[in-house]
Structure formats: structure tokens, C-alpha cells
Length: 152
Image (tube, rainbow, N blue to C red; front, side, top):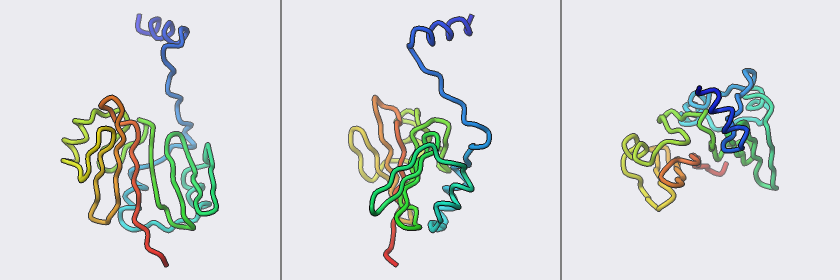
């Protein structure tokens, strides 16, 4: 019965199934983020590609390069990672954040934000990393970590 209902919804275009990430491109986001939180923020892009596999999208400007893998984005300034974001429920942060969570779940898990707007909560970690949680209709749509950079 359930399979028939799902097939009907897909046929009518009411929903799109989430594509499975190929096994060769599975990403340990939480483990990588733990390394970033511990200060390991200088990475060569080719080393990240070796770790995560070929990106599904690339975007570059004169000052920044962004690589994306299945709803995970990393932005580099030189060899420093300045931002990590995800927009896909398949990824979970070390704090347990995930796209699709209710705003109340975020507040219970992380406490009150430093800044609160209707569609964004902002937290700051002890390492000066800014965590932005973007909301739509009371649910997490995007989570972004902006890492403090120091000029070398």
C-alpha cells in the first residue's frame, strides 16, 4: 500500500525522492568539522577532493573558491577554509544539527542564540566560529559555519 502511494505521488510530481549519495562519495561531515573546530583549517583543495571525492559543483571568484558535494559546501580563501555549509538532511554536524529540524529542536540543543531574527539564529563558539541556522516555516533549511580567519 505504502509503495503504491509513493509511486502515485512521484508520478504526479508531488514530491521528489532524495537521491542516494554514491558510496564512493559518502562524506564524514561531523568528523571533518571536528578537525576544523580543533583549528585544522589550512587545507589544499586537492586534499579535500581526495578526502570527499569529486565535487558536484565548483564556483570561483578572484578571492574565493567554493566546492560542493551533495548539499555540502566548503569555501576557501587561499588554502584556508572560511565557510562550511549544508542544505541537505543527509549531513549532520558534531552538534547534531541537521536540515529539516524544527527551530525548537535547535533551541533545545544549542540554547538561546546570540542573535535571533525571524529566519536566522546566530551562535558564536569559543573559537569565534559563527554558526548561522537559517529557518523557513520554523524548520532548518541551511546551516553555515563561518570560521574566523587571521591574516598571515
